Image (cartoon, rainbow, N blue to C red; front, top):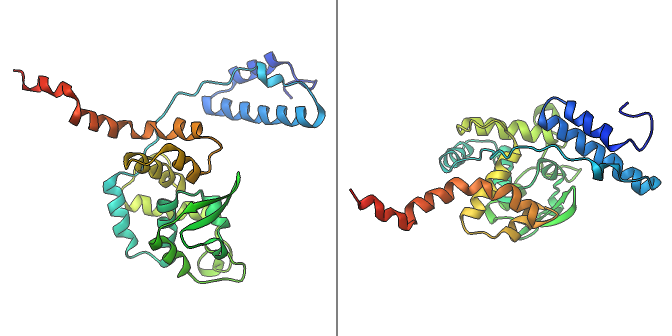
Length: 246
């Protein structure tokens, strides 16, 4: 136990976080303590002890995304993929939903131009391309109504997060992706980058992602486009005039 009393003193929490090895582990503890703090304050009217605790600073890291070349290879690989796998990869690339949201997707959620996505912030409508919609509707229907199921002896069981991760990882590896992370989140991040580079606005991207605020979207996805912005800068900057000076 961190403290024999509740709520604990902020300096006890602060010292504990300082002694934890690993920035991300310390931040995970911080978020857990904050959740307990909020519950205690709401349920038992205890004082908000975490408001006096400084959150561990996490250095900004630009996570890798799928390149245009890898996307082309991925599309080529999908031509010989099973209908289920093809629908899964296409859905993540086209709609940028989370694996848990894909697991909850039912045929009744597929509308003409949108799908109803049930996520951690409730439900929302996400636009869907005609091509993706046709792939989803062509899949076998089961009594439970869910779109995605396992294979072989698990063909009657709804596909869960781990199943989506394995499928996406396999095709990312075939496409030559060499990032540290695999799974649907990579395609979700890539969607954000492609969206912004194509001229899409931040507000619409935030609504598609299901973020609670545009600030969240801006914080995590604007940095992904920095290299592409640098390439545009190199092409259009007036500083290019100095290249002609010998």
